[in-house]
Length: 121
Image 1 (cartoon, one colour):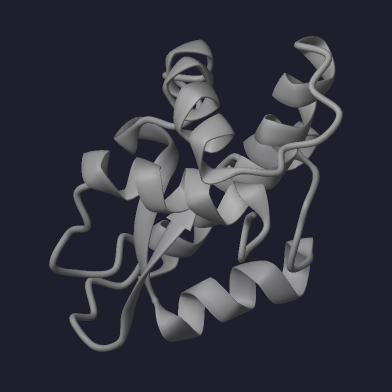
Image 2 (cartoon, helix red, strand yellow):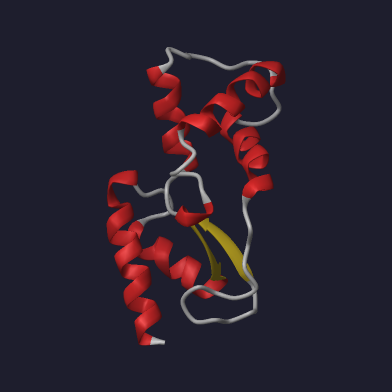
């Protein structure tokens, strides 16, 4: 039986590949750094489950089987090219503007906003 939502197991599994930098991508601050996925892992996983006719995941064993294929299928979206290290202030600001859980269709707008903020600093 799962103790957490399936996507939390997926996120934990994916952490092995990420390389958090030593400073905020926007302002270069080294204080209170956080990791930000440009693409929502939850949205990608929900979409992947729908495409693969997976209605319910109830065991850790099932997660272990699915997570490797999910990672392969969304390798680019889940890559370091689509993840940023941000200071807490910029990370909160990004989510205040685009929402705590924004739709993956706005990733280009988020990237644009990040680049504009970087140019201002």
